[in-house]
View 1: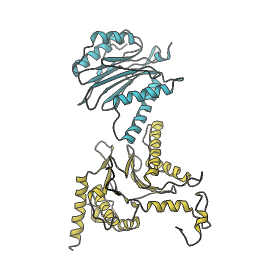
View 2 (view 1 turned 90 degrees about the horizontal axis):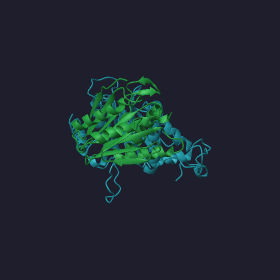
View 3 (view 1 turned 120 degrees about the vertical axis):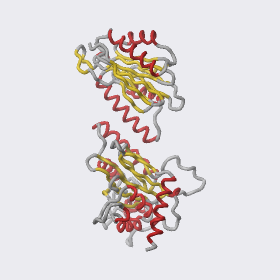
View 4 (view 1 turned 90 degrees about the vertical axis):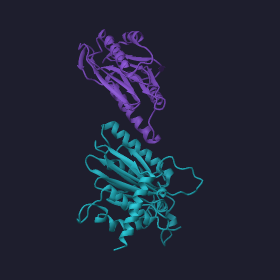
Length: 268
Length: 205
């Protein structure tokens, strides 16, 4: 497939070559690969972060995953969600874990979240400039907490570019998800606070919003707890970061709440 | 002067009935001069593993940080806790990797198997030669004293409180005849219900 009307093919082969329009086609193709992957939503709440992903079950014969295929812990205070080629992601996740561990070994302090993200992204970037190797076909949502900046949510793509978000979507139908977030994030329905210009939701509200987004992006398939993976990151009473993947029961409870909300919304 | 005797240490780990105890002195010295009386040499690695690191103080602290790093990686990748046997082996290979420029530490490992609650004890030399025993392991600058006291006082299948007494008496008596160890002690008793830590007050000399 060609990504523009001109003959992009001539400039496809080497990742290290710009096209005449100033594009890196290999990087763009990698981003395309991710748009076919299971959706991931990330939402920054005022007391934590929610990451929700679509579990794609490609065959009934597949052994049930012992652990997550979407959510990975990187260190005690950071985790990530993956959209794209899992094999590529595994390499990068290990890189991130090593980096976080080495930083802690050197400074006896947890690595600031942005530094961890930047390290992974620099690694991804080098595959767009050196060696003639293909880029990683992975996009990440990073969720983390540090003392200086509190809870943070970052998104990264195969180019090695990253940005911080209040809420974002990656993977299949991410545009639909993003437009829903634009209208719903910060509105009073997802927060228990009174009307303000834009308020961030609490984790419970963020969970409901995330499920709503997944419902939209998984359009056509019925929302069910086995098809979604809901992850939260919060602080416990002693100030330690807690990673939690919701159980089937807990996830179903959130889905039911959302269903009730949308059902009653139609009544007015 | 041996580099392993530069800072001074005394430690014992002992097995009881479905429990283990590990004890160490508190002295940090620079040869004859005592510099600290609350130096930590026994470290909790997780709910079921404690490691005692005796020897050159800088290597004690470095090795502890390296072990924390390696355990952290293991838990992230395997999504489960390390068992005492695996930890002991990791420590052994870590030390041997520095075969011709070793860490000057002779560690002891005390753990409880999470499923069976059976005690696990091991000790090794500075290049990682491991030894696993059912009764007790010792390390430090007064191992002769420690072996003598343990051999005399040890009985199999002691309950946690009796194990504590045995460990405390064995340690205190041993360090009193060693100039380089002592200045207090700490004893950890590990059972399936948790860890109890007690400080010992002995001769402060």
